[in-house]
Image (cartoon, rainbow, N blue to C red; front, top):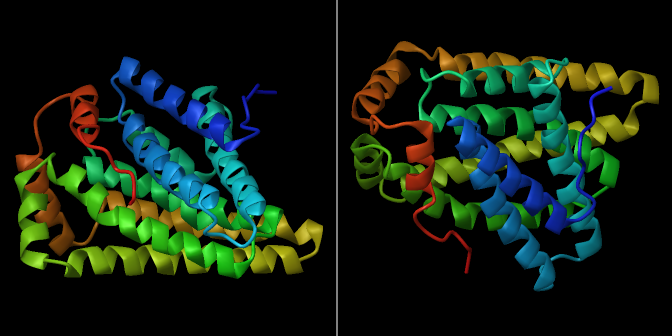
Length: 254
């Protein structure tokens, strides 16, 4: 059995995410992009819990830990050549390749983590809808900051951001909320299902996430055109150097 170090607290989550980032930096791997954004968002949510934003902050912290542990487990098992979910396997394999773009790497990992792991973690911890929805607002406030970092990797994303104004941020926030609503619906189905039925529900969610991830890597023609423009203009530097570009500013939500 693969030994996986699990987080027992939010501080543990941040420590283990920092380790993931440093390992990826040492390995010159695209694995670091998602872990970096994940650490920013975790910090923002934990800060909000400390500030009294949530009705049940302890339940929210348990949710942070349970959610992150699914990522740590999947990552460790993949690195040990043990089976992982299809969506995570797709994301981790892509991170070992130089063919995908920074934004594709991040979306592949978000796809696996939100569309599968989030529902499972929400079912395990029983976080209320009210507090679950409050996280959406925190994530939404972080979107423009994250987009600002991604814009540093290519002038095409900066141009799209300028042309779209606030619309592209609003679209991203809407898409993120929609994915999180689907994850909460999965949590409700898991809680209502018999124990023996739950693995099949998770497998169905993973199959949908895998198919979506495959479309991210092999999108329709129109999307291929703008991705080709991003590819041509994305800074022709190593994953380690791209990570340094993403790290250039503080992303704490005010």
